[in-house]
Image (cartoon, rainbow, N blue to C red):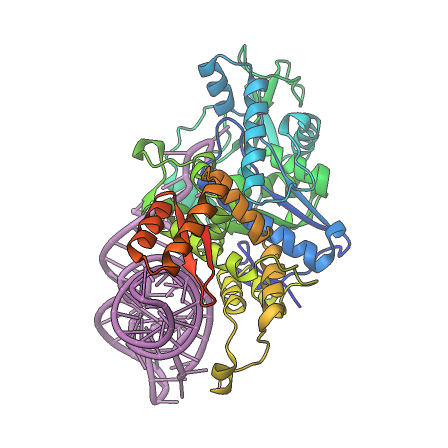
Length: 469
RNA sequence: GGCCACGUGGCGGAGUGGUUACGCACUGGUCUGCAAAACCAGGUACCCCGGUUCAAUUCCGGGCGUGGCCUCCA
């Protein structure tokens, strides 16, 4: 099966061929650790986790290296730490721990490497020295700046020409810049700000600019050129454009990454998420109300490049779908391998909505009579084979990893239900029903419903119950 | 203002130059003491206007709408 991925650089879907099949390399821009991650941050984390899992499936788990950085040096971090009166290190460590918990709850595997910016200052300085030596960067007023016009192909990723960027520029141009578009690689630190000895012969201590850290960490962990670079679409310009400029000019390579992937933007209830709009929703808040698995499925029901609207209604629907799937698979063991047509959908540029349709098919196998009526049986699964492949397929994208019975226990615990009480009420109702005392029977059912428990009477006279979601 | 996306049935959401996507909700039915669940059945959508074509939701052009970037926000 060949994997096709959409490349932002060429704006086309292409067959993916890793440079080295024994070491598929992917870099994704991770969080700047100064506050809880919001649901918009969760999108790339989940999307690229799915890609990571798919690559591991296709090339073997030990042949995929996934790097997602932690940016722990940044002006917003400094500001937040000062605001709270805590040491910077304390803020970044705590935020990182919170982030790790959140994404684990979303069912994301830990990346192979999670490098921190502050542990790669040396690599950044090396890159900067190289860029100065090659004439792509210069020192001015204790800053090091990348000279954008020195790179003819600058703007290729975001499809903008230098002329139009200058024409549309609304930025105040610092007087020490040679060209308005030049961006900072290194800047001097004010007292109290994190500081390291500066490169390029600058006497005063300083700190890195925004973009250089990713070039440095990708280089350190993946090399000069690697396979996939991902992130949110809002990072295309300037962040990724600048990363490309830094890395390509430092290494004299035609490409930094062979495939550039960007997830679409997320809105909340039809509006842009912003603190000012009061709809800023963190992963942590959502996890208080929903299992991480629901959040994950909800995210994957939209193709990653499509804009998406995060809504309560969508969450309710996702929750319902998962409940049904769990009911369908019960406690069966997963099949050895995922369903092939499911994998095919994923291989088509991570078409998770289409893959999910295949999960629906397996959760709802065609009945014999219907198949006879002309529905194609090609590739269709039935019975336990369908259940087992539903599970193995869903697990490939980080869903349906639990057993239905343990999920029920969790639900009972979460709702703080007393099983003994419920079962004695169920028994009392059965007795009432047998003696045709339906008013008593219905009263008990209402009482049970009040507790958030739903009853199901079966044809053989037995009654089962489940926790309402 | 410049650049870039997106616009599908009540909602979510794939996809395709000509055949039922799918899911949720809804309606009818089967089952049930009544429910619930389950199962069966039902509803032919693709922003507007031109163009290309035997044929366009799908390709091209224009318009309208929404969103993103241009301001170290995924």
